[in-house]
Image 1: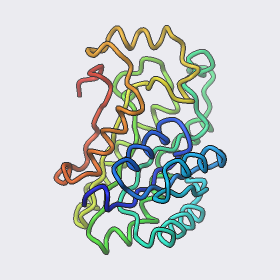
Image 2 (image 1 turned 60 degrees about the horizontal axis):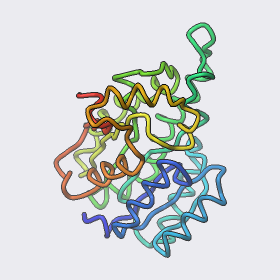
Image 3 (image 1 turned 90 degrees about the horizontal axis):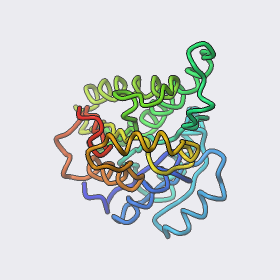
Length: 253
């Protein structure tokens, strides 16, 4: 299905990577659901700037009922099912190498927060849209991951472990949902320069990344969004269960 005929749900889309994803899909003519949790003003500003083909909808993606209500509102508003889900929301985490807890300080609650933000949230959005996708024999799910799984420049334990689990989730969903014409893939960026979450990353860390990356630069949110467009487009119709690393060549997987 062409991008300009699609309705795309992007979680955590009020700012950072999510906002760039929303802009990228809107520029291709897609209907865009700008999901937000707390940042209502930013989400509505973004939605307004994108025009009549965008709507801002609140939902905590970890809450099944809130996700179901959001999807219902989106379908009613656009008069068409959601065709593509981009699971992007980041829950309670910042890429701060100074504040990051070390192995002596870690607690399970921190890991559980990231598992819920990565796995439970993705499960909720897929299940909320699955019946419609199955009926139309078409669907695209794009999970946002990280190259820190392969190359932990900083040991962001909780976040990286949650995203590692998301790879397994992605591949299992791809295996089962392919029979319904649904592809499930993952786009894993490097430490992006710059988002709200990476604004506390030190220049030293970015310097290490830039000096060891073949393209000699940190990846931008816009570059990550380009890869998401590919997975949602007809060009990727035969691709599923894949984790595409978009980081300038730092990780060659």
